[in-house]
Length: 270
Length: 319
View 1 (cartoon, chains in turn green, brown):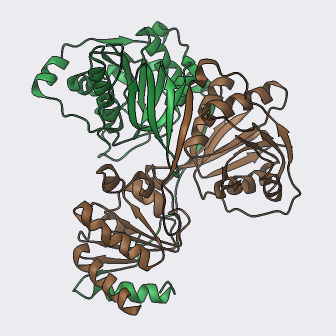
View 2 (spheres, helix red, strand yellow):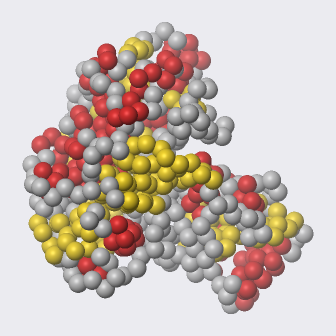
View 3 (cartoon, one colour):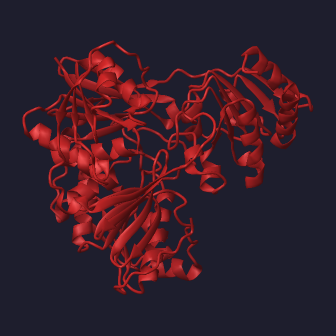
């Protein structure tokens, strides 16, 4: 799984990584009572899923012998702390789209916005995203971005190698994996564990503070936000799900296993 | 009458269980058309039995990925005049990818991770569980159809209706241009012995509480003894102890076995979403505050390294 990609003939590979800045998953999620969408007003951090994409990008550029890793992100309130983490890992620069008009955006709008940010950066040989975010887990933005940009895509990439201007990917499937080749430029979404993300060094953290992040609005990108009304969906109800009650809980005194045996016997499993 | 499409998938020449689940739900909503990436002739009878009146088939995809090929074929059919009111997709790799590209082609929103759908006249609403399944959000589609929705496995029960074979209509994949740049060159099927994880009546899962990768062998042994399938929490999959295909949870497989045994799993909400539908849950964990005990029918607060070997020994002794 820690395969270092080799063999790019071009000596240069530019990669753009889509990174999401999300509320810390350790804190419980909450819905804003008014808008009924996920609250994103506290501290936002780099989605762990995206650390794999950033690491993959850094390794590919390294293997190519030149080029750089840029970031695109869409976040409220001019939030950049998650992007700084990725810059500290070694990315060179980023574009942040932050705009109150984008509040409540659905996945399709997000994809259009991020695609526009990619275009603003002049495109890249490869665009990398996670398969889904750790807070919303809609899981469609990467493929939607590929369609907006008119690019081929390989989702669920668990191993990525660039070989002479062609991408060679092991793509995870329900039954195992497929080997896929893809022309560049392309977009891929990567699975957790595709590479081992590096910890930013102290030097990297200090350098990150002065790396450029261009903050833009939707209008700057020429995207008209659909806003709440145009989102195409409307939340009509929020309810508590039926909860499941606990049964018998016992401390193991060395004979706890006998309770399991009896339980299974009772169910005629054994 | 509501015009419903179902993105139908095939395994070993037959429609997948997930496809049959969606078809069953679809026929409760309106007239059903299946859409297959590939050759549908071998499946037309079964698709019809489960309610599809008609099936569009792209024919062999020639190595193209379904996301780009099937979405293009769907768009061509829609542009040709057959535009559905709602399209149901399975929440899996290909279902998500096809829905994603189609949503851009049609400029329509997507709603994923749903467990239910209601149609009342022109109004279509879907329900999705969030925050580990404790909260249910119902969302109504607004604007023009087609509405695109993806559903978690096992949201609906599959039931045959006894209909006659679906009529097969060709829906070829148009020119893909640059978007068609990806080609599948080899397919690897991971050989598994024993029942498939998401179909097994008994699942034994291991988590971080096992301590190290070697200890997972106890889970495999126990699963085999009970003629079940081994599963895993995301933590040990991310740590590389077992392949991703073992993962149970929000971003893994949803399982609804008769018995689910969780060994060394604390019960993070994203794991519980994948297994709280199990009929009977047994949990072994040394932390009595572990959230898994909140849903376990039988909980043993103890060390998995002590409980599992004794359990395995006792079961082996029974022969």
